[in-house]
Amino acid sequence: MAGREETYSRTRIVLRALREKGHDVITCLPPDRSFKNYPRLLWNTLLKAPKCDVVLVGFYGQLLV
Image 1: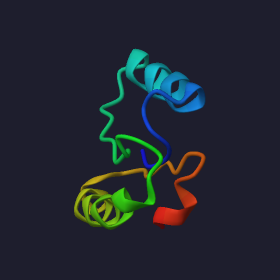
Image 2: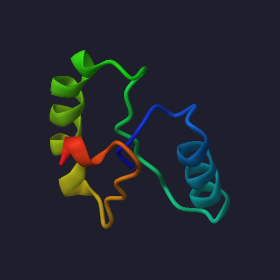
Image 3: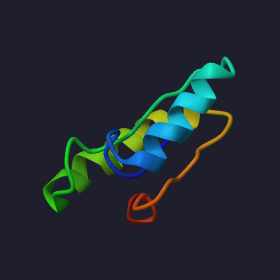
């Protein structure tokens, strides 16, 4: 899942729901809202995405893709 930081309410709810249903979740989330994190996040997303069956882009994650 790519999007806002893990403490953001929607992100937290979606992650919890997926995990409770038994899905393996790999995240590409920033530690905070700073744009300085974007180059590293983009790189991490590109490395992790090919290994995934589904990529869920949450709020604020559109800038990463």
